[in-house]
Length: 204
Image 1 (tube, rainbow, N blue to C red):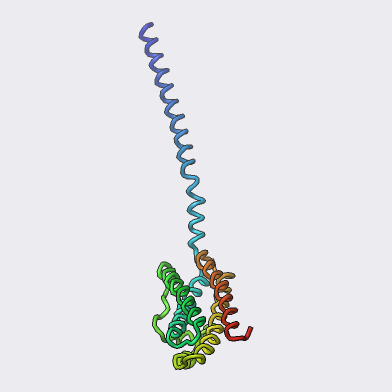
Image 2: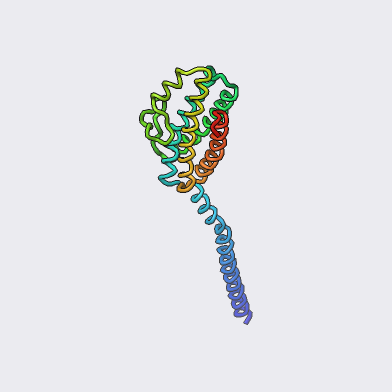
């Protein structure tokens, strides 16, 4: 009798231990599932934030040389312009667009896309909205004083209008959040500068 009782008790203890392990395992599974669940929406959100499309690539590839020409024009004002307001405007254009060029170049490198050719030869971009021709640039470089001021402001108004058009397309059709935000900033800033330049020209 004693042996049987001990055997039955041992069996019951073993069964209880097994049940406890099963319940613990189930509970552990739920805890694991719960801990991983929040990562899925986060990963999805990250993927959406970094997604880009062909318009984003076109925007960066087009705006980099467009900005580079604006910098080339702005740098001429330092020793050619007669108006301090024109010189100040040119300095602000250079300060704003230089960092934007570096940012857009970084996007293209990260996306594995071709970078626009660097340098001052913009002949390959002559058909781009607002881009100056080689003749326009040559005439601007020869001008000084008030003639330079007038020519610079007239050309830069046209140049800015082209940039605003390009940025508007990116804002409407792009997918990459940072590019769309930059496009919005370009539209706002350059429309304000267009208004300022027209006032300086006396045409507004």
